Image 1 (cartoon, rainbow over the protein chains, first blue to last red):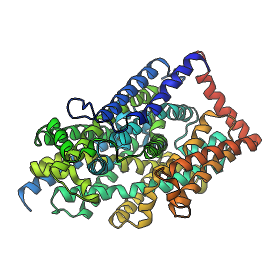
Image 2: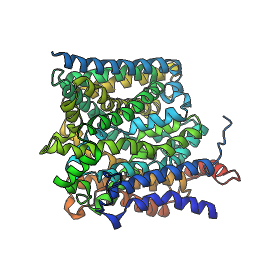
Image 3: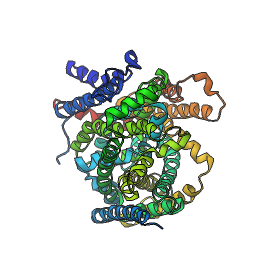
Image 4: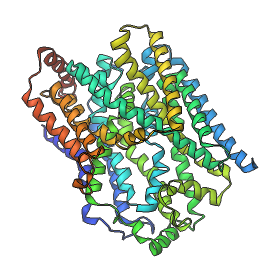
Length: 69
Length: 498
């Protein structure tokens, strides 16, 4: 596996690991914007990170379309 | 019947008619050929694909079960539901793109057809077909039950549940029957948009009636602080559920239909990239409304809390406002059911009818058979939804785990040249057997603690896949077939352009 492929593999797999945030299991504070508990905000950030990772992957690593569309 | 209830009924009817109109207008051009009818002529562009995949995957659970769950267990449900579903989007590339490539190259129209042909194996095809049919038919027939509850609830019981079930099924069946997948996909464009807009509208409408989000959160902290934490969830539950959703969702048969119907890779790229954003948009409002609902309606028990959002709307606004906003629930039910109807009819036609009864029907006859199946399934749906047997409800409970068990075999078929048909068949049978052992109580659930059955079932499937594939040798036909498909994939993924 080439170095870049390895890094992309890690980038795609990382959210699966970060989803299991056992180190802050019941951490409510700080309440972001005064109403979103920290552990929920962390998961929202993780979803945003996935948007960025998947977007960059689609732009820079997705193999070219072999069919002439 | 009172004026406000009439208003609610008018809003629901207008929504159903508008959906029907969109489906019929957009679908009628492509319904002449088999590929046009069942796969929208493989022409679904990026945004139609995004909305149809989103609308198909989000069922009524997101608007009823999820806020009901947050009411009892808290907003920790967000990671449990939203992040896990977002993780599944990785598989739109890992499974979806390879499925699209093979489908385009070899003209596959269903998942069993594709995976059976990778190995040149009828056994692989039939095992996957059997599992998909069992869980999808059960899942499909219970969806309209939710529509009955919603319509009955919004009209204060003036419209009985059975009328809601029949009405929604009639509307769905007409547009799927006439326009096939294209009608379904374009109706989903509307349904998906409605689902997003309505849920945000519901949040804004309710949150300012209860003093704004900060006040609502402070009130909750003072009365039920555990609902803002995650103490009601255990780590094993968290990991198990992540596995069920992330591995189960990408192998829904209706998703394979969508992968195969993509116009080009851009359709899958857009969907994969924006999918996690859609999960934030849906789940933040519904889960916080569910938890904040405690302040207005404390003490709800069991399934009562599933109606917390309609109850909140009904408490503060006229019934027609609730009906307009809760169109999102109808949208979720209709889009999921429509996708399942067209997918099951395609699988019946391609994997059963054209294999066992009539190997070479004309294009028109294929569309005709598909329509007959859709009509028959709609009748079946109606009969079962009006009086669901316990066995069906039990199958639905296990559906996600049943799907997740397929994933190791499907990934092996797409990525591992050394996997064998015997390995894939054994993997699926072993994984499903583990599920059956727990489902029937032959092995007590208590031995799992708070882990879910998906963990031993998927692990068993993966281990059996590797062991049996290593111990068995493919015959010549299977070897040629596997090499042909992987050689094709290698030209794309191992070329300089990759």
